[in-house]
Length: 392
Image (tube, rainbow, N blue to C red; front, side, top):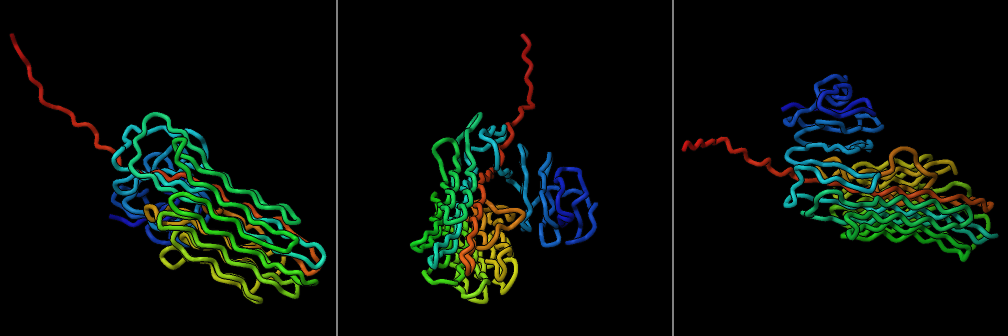
């Protein structure tokens, strides 16, 4: 057994390409591609980008994901005795010839809700409410054959400037009747109110988005709530944290909730943004900040809210590791401007702020859902090697 570490960011994992494989964390590429006896690790030295799964990709175990995007297309990755693929586009799944009706799990993740735009009318003002996390449904030992219809829930749209409600995330559907619904969009009004969107439903429910701060006080700034975490294998998603009111143009946003079974994002206070909620293992939430961009979560933790200036981005919610050690649902995004890079499956969007002079911002989008399929291949039919010749 050998250890293999992914390095260099974007690349292809198949049976022969060696470019992105190292024998040590952060080492030089060029090590042989993993075999079925080798362990694979994605860590902070793996880089960023997309890992494209090609023909013959195999390993004994996988650990971590460093928030890399995995693109499977029509291919499967073999991990130990199981095969896995992730559906993010398309509408029809072709049943593999080695499909096992008695040993499979299908994980549905709904789309995350978008956050609302912030709003102000005179002294009445409210930061954007965070979007709700996507719902999650587990299907076990599904009997299928031929082509199976499915749909992937889209991420909810961003609410418009001036209090537009965030869009509801789309419903992820398998074989017509099995669903994980998307999280609802956040809202903000001149009443003034700011409310985070409800989480989507399924076997478990996504986290509710955090509320933006709201008050009828002139010359105050108001920050947005964090996005709710997607539900997952280990339970409901964590709720997003709330924003805070301030008397100057510095903004401290709520943290995103952790993914399934994780904790809520932290509420912001003047001077410090809300931290991201942890995953079900009690870790992974992005740390709070006093200025600048929020910090991304890891392994299903939520991103922290941004702090300080109006251009700072919220921390990205992260991809969980609860499925085969490297795949899962997403933590919620921290409040603030939309983060760049990978947004994990089912993450609610983080809300934005109102300035002391009443300038407002559009909300941010939620992230799309996905279907993760894991099965143990059926045994190949036995071949009868005994021949009998009858002579009359």
